[in-house]
Structures are given as C-alpha cells and as structure tokens.
Image (tube, rainbow, N blue to C red; front, side, top):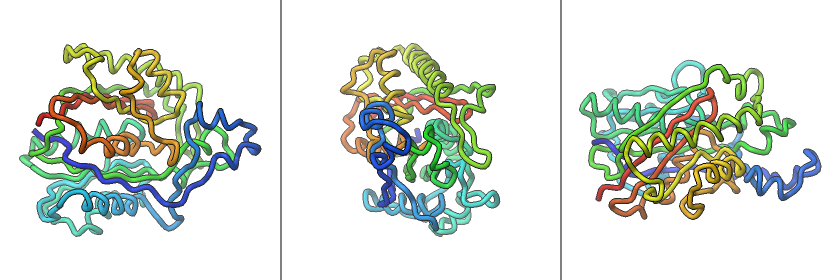
Length: 307
C-alpha cells in the first residue's frame, strides 16, 4: 500500500510581525496570540513563485532522505496560486527537478483541505497504475493576493511549501478518509482582485463540519478518540483549533498547534506539522488529519504507523 515516507518543508526566512500592526488594526497582543495565533507571518520574496517554494521544500527532503530522481513516477502540486494560469505548476516543478519524461505531472486546485484530498487522490492514482514512488507538493503563497489593509486576512496567512515522498514501502499508511463540500458557501473565502474572507461564516462552517467528519471516521473504523495518538488539524487560527478541541473533547496534549511563527499556510499547514513528528511516530500509533476551508470544503483521514 502507498503511504507517506518523509516530508520536506520550506519556510521563507523573511517574517512580518503582527505585533507591529496592533495600532493599525486596533487589536491587542492577547487577540493576536490567543485568537489568531500568529505572531509572525512568513513572506516569500517578490520574485518567488509557487514552484520555487516546491523546489526549496524538495531540497529539504533531500537532506532527510535519499531520493533517486529517476525513480519518481508522479509529481503533483496542490495550489490555487500557480506560477501561471498555463501551464500547470507541476510541469514547471517537473522541469526544474529534471524528472523522467514518463513521470505523470498534474495540479490539484484545492486550498485548506487540499493536502488530505491529494493524499487520497495521489495514493489511489499510484496504486491503480502500479507506481511505487511519487512526490506530492503543496504551495499556496497567499502574500500575492492578500490585501494588507484587510484585518480579516492580513494578520493570518503566511507562505510556505512542502513535499511528501509517497512510496509503496512506506509505513505511515491510511486507514480511511472522509470528504465533503458546502459549495453554496463558496463566497465565504474567495479571491477576485484580492482575497476576501467572511471570518464568521468560515468559523461557523469549520466548527460544525470538522467535529462531524472526525466522528464519522472514528465510527467507521470503530476507533475511540482516546486511541488517536496525535491530531493534526489545519491551522486556520488558534480560536478555530481551540473550538474544535472543545467540541470533540480532545486531549489538548495530543493536538498539535504550531503557526505562531509563520501563519496559516493553507494546504501546507498539515504537512508542516506532520513533518516535525513523522520520524518519532512509533509502530501502532494512529494519527488524525483534517483540512477545512476554501470551497467550502473539508477532508479528514486517519493514518497508522505500521512498523
């Protein structure tokens, strides 16, 4: 079965401090820290595009594990902020990495739920086509579309990129997935000329669908929530995470939170979290992932470390 072997990440060195914007947006330090959960936002350079974030993440992956380029059979990029409308960003990444010509390359246009959706899509694609090794990238640099004068978005989003090495020999494998959409609410988070977010609508959506999705998965697998060893929830905001934890009555010590120093990185948020723990997971441990947001859409999964 195809699973996750390793994850490479990239966070731009440039940071923008939200603490410098307290007066501009008439907010307190406590609001920044306890409600938003972002003290500094990672900011890519103006010349960097999504493919550059992907390549930098791949460099990090190579520092963690040996990767033979000639063995890569698929290259997939999750982004809604591609380098260009045409061609697909995965083609650009394919070219920059000099991947084999028989390597399948395509993009997946999803936001905050994109990583978990893409895991299911790419793993199934690889399995169906007899592939044994692939790369799943995420990169959604919202700094290109955020209005720096919009309090609802300017304090929240940061730039980052990740790449997950998917292999048939991996030991972190999926047990089940759950997906859903409330397309009628798509206007709650959208980009026309600049990013717009109805914070109240997105919060209400997230606080409702995520607990239901996770309960559905646990019931399907007949697993008690107490038997989940780590929870990796999309880092929408500190307040959203806290609310989901309260509604599911989760053990806070098992819920990973880490966005203070780089922000909400959209599809990269879950792999960013998981990258720090993947080497320390022990055989038999189970983890839960849940992404939610743009669409409005959600995707959840439970994985197990097999050996």
